[in-house]
Length: 196
Image (cartoon, rainbow, N blue to C red; front, side, top):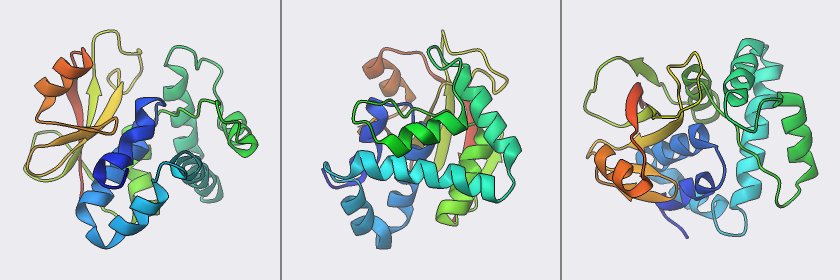
């Protein structure tokens, strides 16, 4: 399944939207990387590639002494039902085992998502308060979202400059389309502008 939609297919089953939203942005903004991303996100390589990408980011944060980000990632992930005992150490151990059916969901606060954009893809993200034209990763909440100090952050999507929203390996015309097709009531709480 080559193409931009492949960037988010794994997010339909696993909670990895901070990573997949960034990959949508990279695919959209960097045509020179599209062939490499198509290969990495092919049907036979996508899952392993995503696990390696996430594990590499976590290890980079450790190596760079960004323990506050790792704590925040753990705190946000634990706010989701079923992940109350989640830890970075255990997560990396599970990825190392590469058990095919193992869940590799991970929740990323806005600052962690922006750090991933900076360190892995040399982007210059900016958190803004108001809607602006351009490519943006939208942080969303919804009814029944997990209670957390990030305004009950529940999901990220990528919206390109033309207004198309990408998530879960699909495309949507706007947030109303997302809500109708996913049977949710998402609203925007964060806007991470994509630069670079």
